[in-house]
Length: 292
Image (tube, rainbow, N blue to C red; front, side, top):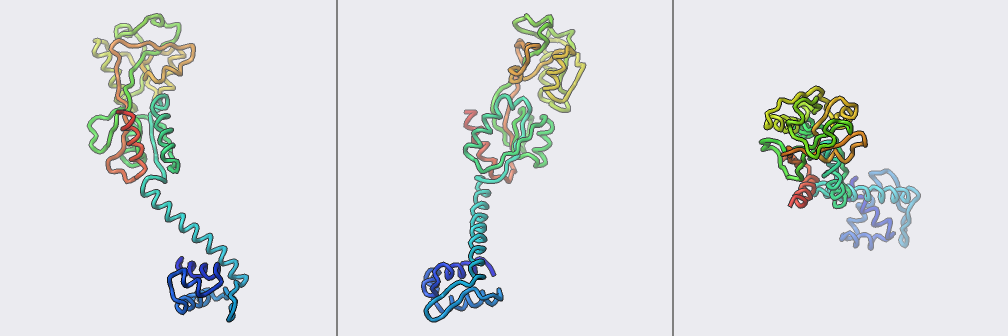
């Protein structure tokens, strides 16, 4: 039996008339009657009581009608859903982002995407830039907000924002009252920064900033996460150059200062060009519109 047989049965169960049921299905009555008999034969159950004037459902037929309605409704829903998934209107999108992007571009992207694709389940992955690169490469992420990669022909990339770096220090630091900080102010400072293995673009920008000023930076601690860097600076273990978007969350024990000729990093949305997930295209369209 298949859904076609269920439709035969339901037509008769709902009309209780062989002629009208056959007409609804664009059939003549004799072949329709044979189909009903075949259904009862396959089930080994009498579904209808019939005589020359009346057709009625047996108790088994009434129960089967309820079940058929449920099955057909589920089948129709499955057909609708598969079309929605194929069009990107439903499904799942694995979306990665750098931690500090949660303080800038990510909330706006997520909100807008959820408005136009409410039936797509967003799986949010807060990761380091290197983890994002690796996960995009192997297909564990469908799209991600990260620093602009180098030559990456396997990725579609859309520019979202520029992120300046600022210096953070304790409020009692000797430079806390300066209006602006330059590399020469930091030549003897203990620096805390994410290692190259975790955020190569960010670390390279910091190193280049000092190199341009003829300063050899003294990196003393290299935690993976920016939140940890902020905590270590608050403990007086050094100073740090961090993305500007993180400076709004500093507590009163810390201050941030602008840098002369501050390093600026491009923040982008990336997705593999070969992505088979149709839910990605709407996210990329939103990013493209916001970058115009």
